[in-house]
Length: 128
Image (cartoon, rainbow, N blue to C red):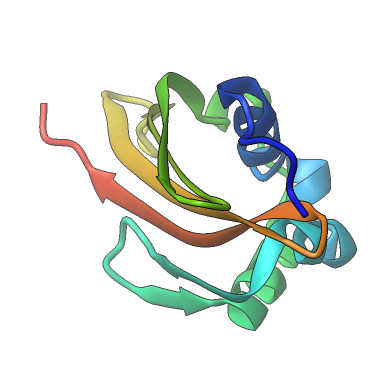
């Protein structure tokens, strides 16, 4: 049984692991972070299921440090016993090298089998 709710830094650390290329390209590492019924509403508007997400992340090419997202404005909300909502903002340089792309992000993390796992994620482009 879970003894206490996580702190913001606990969930932030798990979330940010999924931003790291070495974790993203490791199916085993991603499997440990995603709940069995995980799904995502991508910023593209597409829906991704767990197995598809794991496969696509493993196929990603090396992400340069400059292209990696910069995350800020984290907030954690308890939504039920054993479930929290993490929200934050990412900023990334535009693909053309000009402008900045901002995305509002939200993830639901649930406590299962003695660990926190991401059950849902959504990225929504922010119009600035």
